[in-house]
Image 1: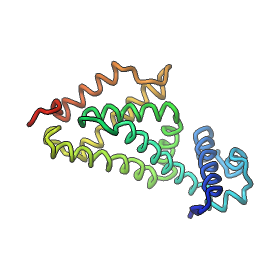
Image 2 (image 1 turned 180 degrees about the horizontal axis):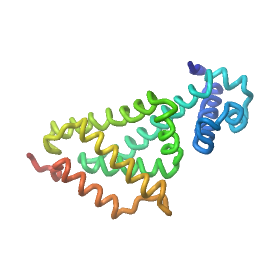
Image 3 (image 1 turned 135 degrees about the vertical axis):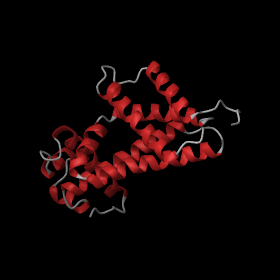
Image 4 (image 1 turned 90 degrees about the horizontal axis):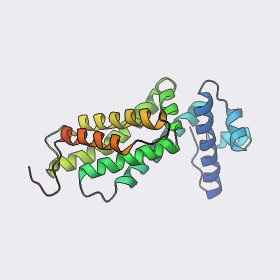
Length: 202
């Protein structure tokens, strides 16, 4: 298991290891990555690595969890203050696209997790869906959207965001999702959720 440091210096060292591991796993893949390569990238000795993580598999899981925490924060921060659920969806998508543009390793590492650590993969997706489900449930109960199943809708929305991000952010020349694409996505989501204009009652 990994140790959680109690000092600011220890936390900074642990974060440096995670950042180095993220880069190495993204560049080389799990099999070719090694603790030696990670510690060289982090600028620390192997002994220091083992103060925080007990091996390559553990640090990989921690990288997945760390990416998940950061992408959820980016989405939540982007959607904060939205007047409607549909606006929150748009802002959340845009926050996700910005994060993936800055951290393309998210896609590469999550794809590896399917084979390296299925538990971490499931944890990544279910944590995103849990937040989505809560927001959609509240919106449905408030009459902002139609009578949809919040969990099903959450999985669908997450899938849309991931595939659109892959096509235009990961594979696109500009690493940005064009506004017209976002408009089209939101139009489809609005119809699927039976979203209602602000102030309109069901």
